[in-house]
Image (tube, rainbow, N blue to C red):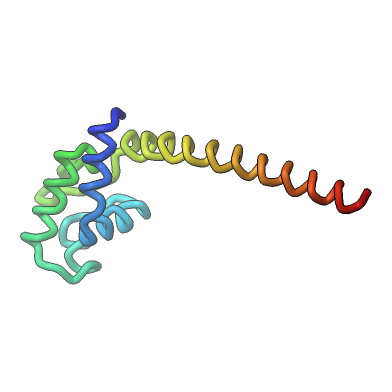
Length: 111
């Protein structure tokens, strides 16, 4: 995922109702009516948020009779994980440097 796509994904998830929908779908696929009931918001709003999430490639829908069942797409979240890992590496390096610094201070105090 490039930087522009990453920014778009984060912007889409920043809206509280869309974030809550993602949280619900993390547990497994759900119908629109289940999402409406669990989030206690109107069906038109849920459908609008699902459309935005779908356009961003974060959810997919499959039809089952008269219902649409929504689930999360894995790739955008895997891309986010890779992006966040780059920060984890940065912080681990800084913490290693801090640990080395503290060890040097401790050795000087002990000698």
